[in-house]
Image (cartoon, rainbow, N blue to C red; front, side, top):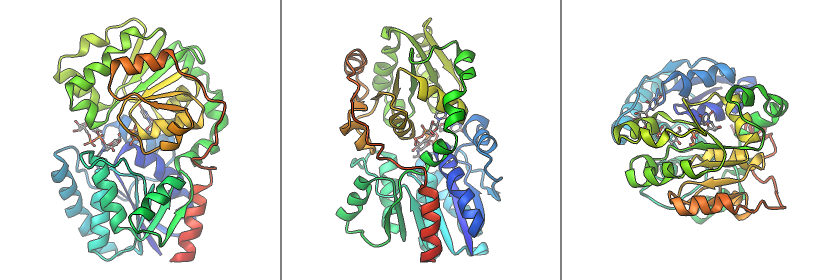
Length: 355
Ligand code: UD1
Ligand code: UDP
């Protein structure tokens, strides 16, 4: 049987690294890269570090307006899908590549499996929320990371072929935990001390397209007592340059880098004193490592991390962020509810049975 896996953005390469390995033991996989992300540090570096097979196709779509990007992806994907006629299409998460591939699967009458199904932020002005809704309406198999995701689907009337398997990105962490924990050379490289620095990322459209939000977030940096490492997403570096905000980053205790590699990032999150982020992936990884997290966004789909007290929604609000950095109460309880490292194995077992 032929399975076509369609990816395009950084977090999708990471999720695919876990699942593709299992898929290839039982199916013939065609890997399609839409080209949504294309810089070495946003794409190839993950294929290299995580030993993901080279894509069979790279559509080279690149950046652009949302509908243009989705439309261009659909046009090129449809040609390949009609030619190769896979028995199943697998999509990940909630990027534009996910929505494009889901529409093509449905229009071509090919069964669709959504990995990371059922997550919601409940605001239709969030680009990813639209992608999540489209994909969950069109899917045939729903692989949910959490109980909340299962109940979100139930609330939409979706109960058939819904499987709670846990989060696939944790599979890679479990398999590499020793390397991630013990690779102290990463801390040495940046001159950081364990549990004595902050790790920050920021890239969501609501923070980078809104100069006031971006200013509020960046203005926090000079008031943080301690070292901060801030790998910049290309979207964020562009927003900083376009709005002339480079000066805010001229601070002695701040290390600004280009996007960091997978293993380096994991070690930096694991050993940080605290994480500041609007990245869904980073929120759940920090939760796994029990690193307290300030969310630079108004909501998260990883609500369990908030209800257990490991992360706090501050939004793009300088006072709320600083206040929580100074008064973060580390919880005693951690349910490790996001996964057991076996999500990919479970997904493939279910697919073998169902197909
Ligand atoms: C996308 C996803 C988001 C995910 C993020 C992961 C959508 C709607 N959003 O957001 O859910 O969290 O990926 O990182 O799909 N750029 C480069 N080089 C690259 C890639 C992007 O310079 O390799 C710049 C371009 O100026 C581009 C901008 O970043 O316009 C945004 O890229 P895009 O893929 O549209 O959205 P992300 O913000 O990366
Ligand atoms: N990540 C990385 N280098 C970075 C920033 C993030 O390797 O400089 C990893 C991070 O650890 C997580 C994933 O990329 O595994 C999250 O991707 P991103 O923040 O781009 O997207 P999101 O998860 O918000 O969709």
